Length: 237
Image (tube, rainbow, N blue to C red):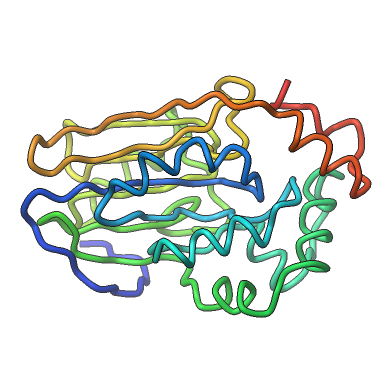
């Protein structure tokens, strides 16, 4: 049995639980707001990393995570904000990280600093493993639909592996562990200016993929005012 390092969290009751899953918000509060009505109806919300990066509503997004008691893990952009960038990255990545590092408020930074890279918890009567990239290299790997890493998750002694990083949704729920990527709440690469998430209803044993369109104009305006380059339109328009 293979088990990556993780951090246990609090448990939630197993009966009639609604679990919201979000990932890759990337400081895009405009997008997140379209998902909040659904997420606020959930009993627990799981955050799969990259609350920061690319765009500029850093404090608004993290303050919302804190207010909602989101149970989260760290993403690679979040790690860059906390510890710096020590590798070549595109201008878009560097802009979002540098901006977040300058403006992030102390309480929001402390919230990021407390996040583990992986987390195990009991929720809705199941054992979950949360990560951003993969259970083994949570800040580096990408588990796309065709990745060989998906098969390797079969060795894990958990019921659900929930992850992000790819900015593309993936639901494989007819296997154990179930694999769930809600896609990117703030920078979908499946369709422009669409906020995505997943809600799990334990009573019905149903996984619902959410897609909520939004107006990207405020996101673009804020980013340009902060000095973002022409790249900022990619994935939004």
